[in-house]
Length: 161
Image: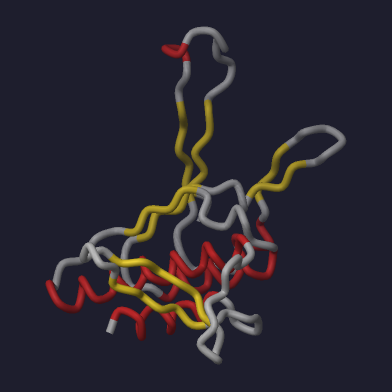
């Protein structure tokens, strides 16, 4: 059941791209190993960073879904920079998959910020934000602060969408 759910998420996260097949292998000491295989059964030894990330994410999504179904408990999913190994198209796919998950998801990311390389100025990426149906908050350090005194660091949270 876990493999099936994980492979369903893997296909969604890698839509229109190679994704392989997740296999969960029980080891001799009753733990498990997650592997990626080709259709012909061969193990993919060195998947690229994005594929490896989506493989592990898929297993986490599957565990979360199965836990919700079996225990009737719903836990939030919390991600810190989940798409750092992705390109732009895969980022959009990830956010659309997350958007379809019926649970609280908290994602800490810099993906929704554009940085002007010549000035260093940061602005929100409203082209991407406007495509999302979820809530978006911006959390940032309040300036000014003393870069040698941790007690002067404060953050502000502002709802964007």
